[in-house]
Amino acid sequence: ITLLLSRNIISQPITMKTAAVATALLATAASVSAFAPSAAFTRQASPLFAEATATEKTTKVKNELFLDENFDGVNIVRLMGLQKMKKKARRNKRKLNEKIREGTVVKDEATGEWTPK
Image (cartoon, rainbow, N blue to C red; front, side, top):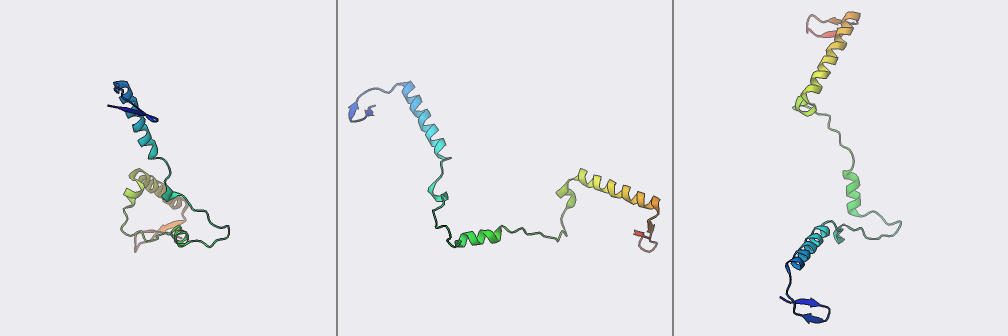
């Protein structure tokens, strides 16, 4: 195996140490190049007061927050967690019991629910 140095071709056998160092350098260069920025992600220079491009206009529209208020069919226990739901139930029951003791709520005979006086 020959090793090329500058303009001269030198016939020299490659030792195990040289091969290991060369392999380590190639592996390092390959792994580091994965983190180097590519030309596809660099932003081109534009005039100061240029109009927004079409992609920038669409991203502004997409970045708006959409709140869905329809929670029918959503498994709340799975979404929030069983322990948190148990804690909320205990807190609501405690508040209802306080209102019952204070006399601010009355049980409706027709529906069986507690309603304010």
